[in-house]
Structures are given as structure tokens and as C-alpha cells.
Image (cartoon, rainbow, N blue to C red):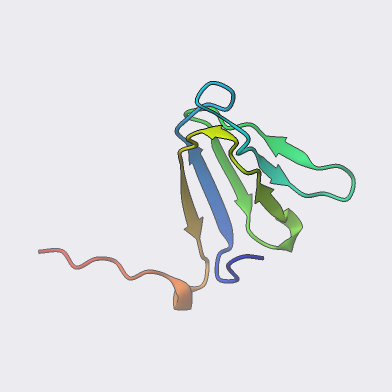
Length: 86
């Protein structure tokens, strides 16, 4: 587990595997066979962030892979405070 305070993680892909870059696929590591997510612009992946979803990202071999990662916590002690409003 990379970040123990995250309960869920989401990824929004902004570029396409195969046309914008090669490599860079998201892989869930599973003893019964890995599961691979090929990035596509607009695709969202959402998963629980515990040891049940161990994962890695392949090294990008050419091009540029763009993605936005947003992590979520259910623990108020790890939450980011709301910004002050003017």
C-alpha cells in the first residue's frame, strides 16, 4: 500500500495508449492473473486503495502519458481542510 491514509483512488486518463504513448498501462497485480487497464482519454478508473488492489504502472517507452489521480479518505484525521472562502 503506497499511501496508508487513502481508502479509494481514482484515475482520469487524458491521453490514449497506443497513439499518444506506449507503455504506461496500469496493472492490478493478482496471483490468478494480472488485470491491465489501457489508458484512453476520458476513461476513469476507481478502486479501493488497500492491499486487495496492489498495482503498478508500466514505464512509458515513448510519448507522454497524462492522467489525473485523485485519492479519497474516509478518515477525518487525514482529510484536507476545506479552503477558507472570502
